[in-house]
Image (cartoon, rainbow, N blue to C red; front, side, top):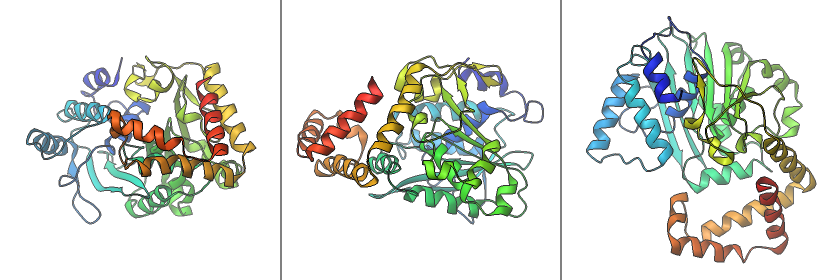
Length: 349
């Protein structure tokens, strides 16, 4: 069963009849990817039901006021339309929507309130903005990155005194942001958090992983990774992973729409040798290079995007742009070039 089939089958049950589960978590974690400008508003505005959100977004798309380009986002949009009339999802309220993309950062979030008054804080993963991928790469030498700081501030603002049961989650980088925001939350807020979902997102640096605060939060963290995970294996994480099966292989497993569902949970699997190798080799590479060397590699690599005037990943589909990018890669420092080739080899082989 896939997520569309799950919504069709379990959308008929309210959350009172069938409790919120890990599949619902992944669905909610993806809603923050959508552009909801003019539909769901920021702090200080009234919540909007999921049903109304879907209908207004559909109207914007049909009138071409909103364009959904990324294939992954198109699937999220179609899933939202399937959810809009179901007893399970139609009355979920969305509020405190925010989206920030500039040369330094990429961040998005929205809060969802369930009928039982519990809330799910959804953090957006990396989208097509190069600044977002740059932030991901910066995690190898800098902590926190701007999106992490925004996530911590957002969580503090969105959780109110009356909120008693708080869930925090995200897919890809959004999962990492969920963990960071929960770690940095003040004690009163951390006590309200019942679950932190990291859906195939990077882990944390070793110096954070070994802190008491992280150890105390670990029982609340559920990290879900497909059995050949790549993104979810970066940086450090607990060995207590929820390992699931996917219909696709390697990097394509990162797309959660390929994850296999067994009734109200994902189908369990075993972590592959490939995924274990990615985790070991990339962390070995990070430990071998100094922070300064890691920064040099990342900065020079992303300077090639800047020199090519590429701000969105879809620009690489242009033959002229991709040629210009490759040409600019040849100009980076030889040592950085060797280190970048080294890490790509470790990921691929």
